[in-house]
Length: 210
Image (tube, rainbow, N blue to C red; front, side, top):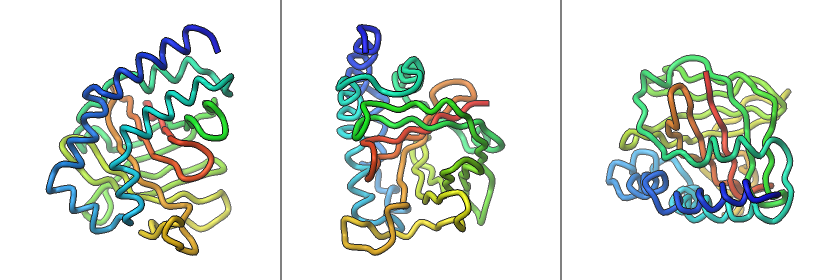
């Protein structure tokens, strides 16, 4: 993988104890977090509470060997500290692409960009990935300037799935599609959504730009 990638990993692990992940911990500590907790399954609540540890493990797992895709995207997306972002700055159309860290592959960076958008819906904000073989849709919950995402993925050709609030770990029949994540700003018109994964990877990351 080379010294440059390892340098990124070392730097990102330092950030795992810095404000970018301290933000996740501060969200968990706030009483207002109960708003999304009323909807999320116990297993998903546990996953988001463990985001700092999962993130650090996923980054470290990237050292196992050569991954797939342009590794130079990893430090650009993973090293910046998460920033607060107001709702108005989220609205509109975005280009988005996915990265996977840890698990079956050390890392995967997909080179194709897709269409995503954030729009008002039923008094809240709806985040949606519109195209590609895997789509997702869900609500964003404001927390201390960041956003908790609760949604669900679906394959192209399937109906859009709703967040079910049940988990395969709890014996549910249908929920590997449920998603929970933390959305933060990482630059001007640049966002990062981190979703602790339950299938192929340790951490799924979606980069948004426009």
